[in-house]
Image (tube, rainbow, N blue to C red; front, side):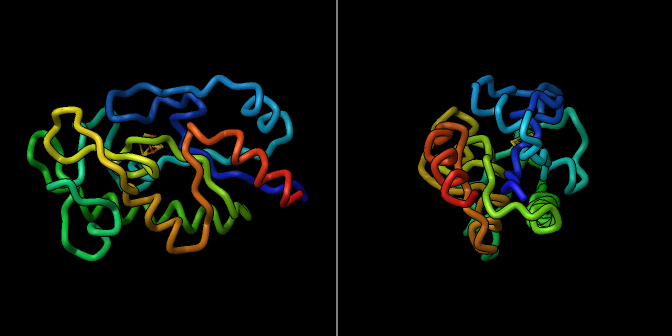
Length: 164
Ligand code: SF4
């Protein structure tokens, strides 16, 4: 069987983001993987019970997904709401969903407090980035699912090729 890839649902263009929109990734590799039926879309924030649209959220105080899982940081909406529990719940469901569908790799959009793996925002809602994992990416990493960002398509393609 061809290796499956868990992908952030917004990268498939599904309108699941906080602003009610998708963020489709237009690339020949994505088209090929779609044609090969390798892509399995999932949105952890929706799975965690959050509505769409929803207020934007960031991990507080320049912390990251691992800090959230360790109880050292919260995920806060710009409006002040604490959505830590929903983010953790959605991330756990994403890992379970990946396992259920035989996904050993994940393609997650960068920058998100859930899906980010190269960078996330620092909790000040000022557009300031720093290196780090979001909550779902951290849980995937813990579970041994290899995470690739949308900026690492070529590297993912090499990985998928090596698994075939
Ligand atoms: Fe996209 Fe992930 Fe945010 Fe859902 S949680 S909208 S899949 S970045």
